[in-house]
Length: 89
Image (cartoon, rainbow, N blue to C red; front, side):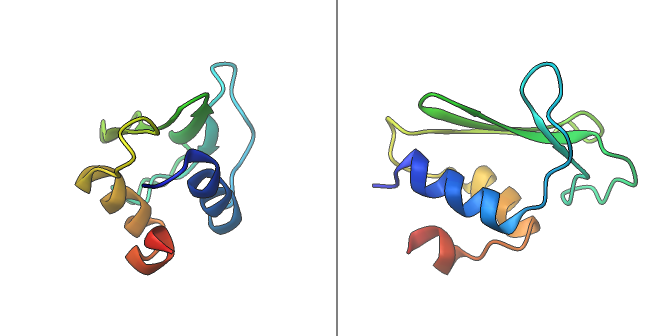
């Protein structure tokens, strides 16, 4: 079972964020679509980690209650250079 706090720490350690927008998303360029503008972001909420790209419409959520990372969320993390080994550690 994966804990949100551990996953959030890993994401914050590995991914350089830009400013936080008014909705609470930590801005960055999307590595899924290789966007040239900052139009994606991670949002850390109680019990959830949300990823959204407003360019390619990639959206995924990690829900701590499930204790599992979806294939889509894992793929997004892989696109940002976070390996499966790091996620599972």
